[in-house]
Length: 133
Image (cartoon, rainbow, N blue to C red; front, side, top):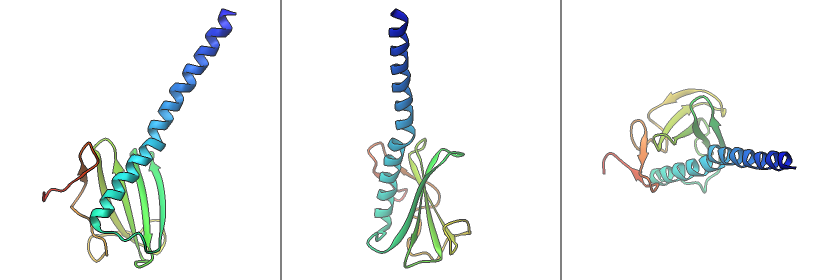
């Protein structure tokens, strides 16, 4: 009887640990990443009322969360936003490509340019910290 109780408690504890690890790495990470990227896009004055395609995923090689946008007004440009939770920062890379995959990156001529060169950092409350502030 004691062995069955021990096995049952062990199974429950193992399940809870697995659930917590899963939640921290996926839905929790996704929610934080989307919040930070939305804040970044608001600072860029991106108009999400226009038509767009969106793809959201985790890059398991780098551990970052990526959200890729393709806006109707710029059909040949892909906006790739990356969020890194280790540094609490967002990076924007814009690609010139008619598809949602690949292409060469560009630095000028897009409707929504990057706010800064490189990564844009956030404070612990989720406020964007710009170097010019």
